[in-house]
Amino acid sequence: MFLLGWSIWCILLTLHMSACVLEISGYDSHEVICSQGLLDCTIKDEVPLAEAENNSLDVQNLTAYFKLCCKDSRPCTLCLVTDILPDIDMEDEGHSGLDEEDSSAETINPKASVTVCYKATSTMPTCKKIEFTVAHTALTQQNRAKLSIVITKPVGVSFGSKVFVYSSKSSLPREVVAPSQDEVCSRELQERVEECRVPGLSIVINREMNQVELQFAGSNESLPSVCVQYERNGRCQNWKMAAIPLYSVTPCMCFQVWEENDQRSRRSQSCPFYNSDLLFKENLWQNVSVSVGQGEMNNLHTMLLWNLSAPCRLEGEVWPCHKDTSCREIKGFRQPLANGKWRKNSKGQWETTGVFEDINLQRSPCVLVNVKGMGHELGPFCFNNTDRWRWSLVVVGAMLLICLTMLIFHILHDFVKKWVWSWHHGRFVEIGRKRHVVLLSPPDVDDSVSELVCRLGSWLCNQGFSVSVDQWSRKEQCSLGPLPWLHSQLLELKSHGGRVVLVLTRKALERAEEWTRKEVIMMTGDDEGLPQILSPYSDVFTASLCLIQADKQLGSAGERFLLVKFDSHPRSDRSLPELLQGLPLLQLPSQTQALLTELSVGGTSRGLGRRTWTGWKWSASDEWRSKPKEGSDCKYVGV
Image (cartoon, rainbow, N blue to C red; front, top):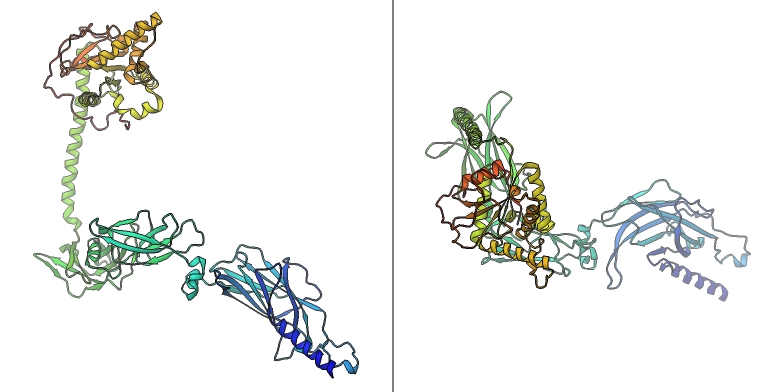
């Protein structure tokens, strides 16, 4: 009797321990729960589609669901729980012919196993094999054998994922859908779920700066990502600034905030202006737009179409009216705005449309809108009868035809004028071919000199020349360098014809004399103490001196280079430096026509000869001060 009692106590203790949750070593993320009658439960990974072993059991029932697993104070994670009812033959009690004196002792059958697999979208199946030993004497019809598998962070599964769970010996998988992130984050445990943590958003209305400031709490060092939407289901547009102008805030404005660098971060949505003051409602009313048009019914009767757009969906009424001294309502046509179908248009506005049937469009009806809470109507927005505009279109067309005729006459007049001018100057200039002019500024820093050079360049553009001014090409010069840039302009002169116009001032003459002295010093071999600015790579003016010297050695400097001075500059007794002697020299604006002759015909014209420095007096002529004509081939390059 003592041995029998001890055996029964050991069996009950074993059964009690087998009902506990077992964490298997090596599988920290998986747990198996076995009911009474199943002993020594273990779980391990199994290869999908592996051949079933002899001890593998069928599954009578399989149930799968998701839950949040929370342990101690650690963050909660998503778990897949599978309840299994294995198919164990209750009639096979596993007796093996024991003696009568041992018939009360329980007999343990060999081990059995069950294999369960799960598969998420776009992933390979993952299988788990549970092995256990069946104690038949502990099982009854009321106390069936059950298994539960808890898989923490299942492979390829996230919030909202669809998962198929099945047994290796069953052909019918069970479909189970993980809860969505919004559903999980709306529960009490959202503080313990990492995916539910979002930056907090608060707003501060700064009326002095006329803006709404966005402030964030609980975000990382960098600002979180923000997008702005109108209405909760509106299209969300990215917003990169920490403030919003006060005039653009409306009652339905909402914000979504999330951590851009955190892949698990969810978006939080807040609409802080729903119960806002009158200011934000006025912003909404000022952005309401209404348009009307014409339509035709199946019975050929006309109808009036109306379209209303606004940042937010509105409540109110729309009705047609006839306009005389005031807009008199056409009775029986009122339509509520709230019942219309609102949709987002291409500009991000909310839009709704409507129709007024059997409206006489010959009387040019209008539409009035009453918005709830506004206190007065919007409109009237009127339909313009196209018949009334027909004669207006005829008049406008006739005026356009007259203007076009005058424009053609003006173009031909300029053409004939240039042809006659060329004839009087002894040779024909190729009409339609734009000669190229390179206008080089002196090395002055005086703004008045720069302005005169720019005006001269603009005037030459209006005369039909292709003009390149060094002041308009600073960006090109920085990338190429002064001397290479000037070489590129000379190549264009070679292909199109034209001249390089060098503007002279007192500073320019001093620079030319320094250049001449430099050449003398270099010929004697004493180059100590030469100023750095004399390098042809320092500025365009110095680079031009280098090219003039090379042309003079070839005897062709006067063919490419031309000197000009402005009458507005003070007198000077200084003579031309030796480097510039022999080049044509003109005074502006007193010798404007001579300049045009030089640039149009090319070469040294008769009567110009060699000019020396003389004192000039400013002429009141503003002929070349006008801006370039539209369409002229002038090169304006960003400074």
